[in-house]
Image 1 (cartoon, rainbow, N blue to C red):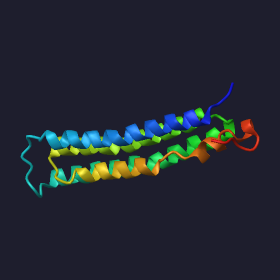
Image 2: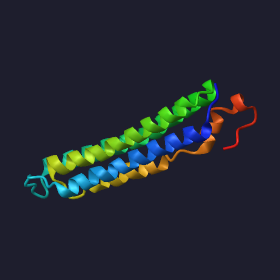
Image 3: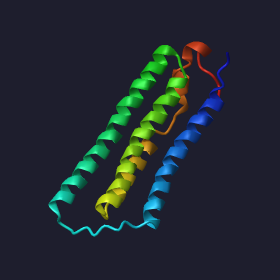
Length: 149
């Protein structure tokens, strides 16, 4: 069984890019569809919900780094390249939760600063950019000294 690291890296990079672009799609969706909610500024209930949604969004972005780190450690221990891909995709999906909370905040509350959750999600996904070294670390025993790709 041969592992084509170039092809695997291209696949992971494509998945990463698609997940990053999905945030742009969510943002465009919110721009072209306006909520029909009359939100009054200073409403204490809405303010508490905004803070709660933002805190949950931050939590998911932060936890995504721990999840990715765990998958990358397991990929090195087990010498399984598939765990690298799973780790990056799951980490990006956890970051995407923040963008989905931004969509929720836009349509349910009508908050004007909903886009901050999109920025948070995009920054988290950008920081999960796949690196070749992650794949090489998961295959160093297989290739005995690394592979050229």
